Length: 123
Image (tube, rainbow, N blue to C red; front, side, top):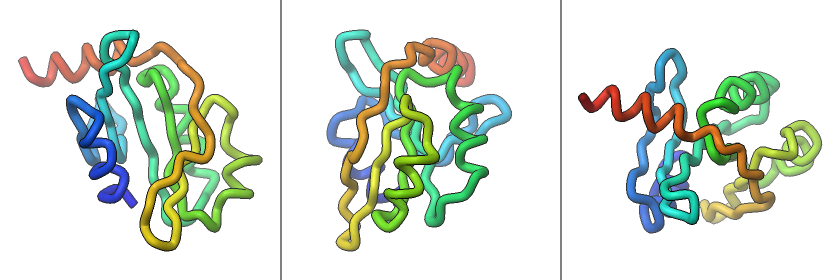
């Protein structure tokens, strides 16, 4: 699932990273996408099976992202639509391995913290 999403994101992003450490947290996918805000930080958490651990992970990433997403198999839509907070986007992977954006995320505006941390890592 991570590979499928990363490939699609690489077409619109200035940077796509997989399994990136940001402080004590490892993010499955980070994508930096140019938009009206400059560059927005999109963080994705992918799971083959939905678990409540995913909710905890999403909550811990809230203050580092402009947009948050979960990536799940298409069979998990009912669980995701009721369990995942409304500010989080839902990406489902269909049986042909195509990513489908089922719910748009809401703008959080917290990506600057992540960008500053990534810049510090490069220095």
